[in-house]
Length: 371
Image (cartoon, rainbow, N blue to C red; front, side, top):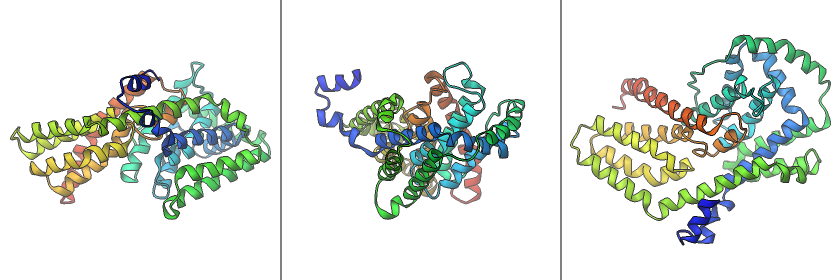
């Protein structure tokens, strides 16, 4: 809010420009998806689904994690919005499974399971967004911890009894929302419209109340700071800052006179880590993709190879920060992973991703004849 006020007081942004992102789809989708997730937790549907997941896949922490990652992977071809897919569908399950295993965000048990599931599911969602395929290398928690929860999960599932009215309505609302998300692109309506339809079902059926939505501080807080970040990042491009930056990098690389391989690596790294200044993959691509691709080709990089690498990295770079992708604020807002650890994980995972994609991926692309 201080940053927003500063842009207004210095006439850097007009009032309309500063608050333009509050009418954008992504912040509202984030808030509504968090309301839907709250209903899943409130009605007990999340607990029931979690116990089912643990019963089937809970012989190890790795098994539970893969079940969640694979579920998100299967939805990838059908739901083009990662916020809707990972934040609206997978995240409520992650939160409920963490709680079912005794892992809460603020009582010292966050790293018992929840922090691991949150971080892993968030980072792998970026991979499925880039390739529609999971390439996960998780670090499982203690298998003994997961194994100990299986029998308890089965007994707790039985103790829940038959599904209640609230769970049934929530399941119906989520089914409607998912169906509408799948058809959003075909029928030309926004993903927020689909989320509003699901929320409306919950409100009309009184599964959750508007007062509860108003009291859900985390959703409104996340929506507010993310909308402000989008506005500021958008203005970086509009004011020419990103254009000047891209031009200077392009000129510097072009004048080095190196071969296309080292020049390409420099361009890829600068493109990737400049995402710290963006709150949207789409904004980053629209601002820098064409310029960096043109320079890469001019230095001798094979056009198809360069185009694909920049496209892949345009997805996985989103995991650098808590605002780098549309669903990042939703995972971060669960409070399982502190900010400093979130940023550290983002950087460390980025090093692993870049290394794997440019080495193993490089050999694979060579085999395919892309370079």
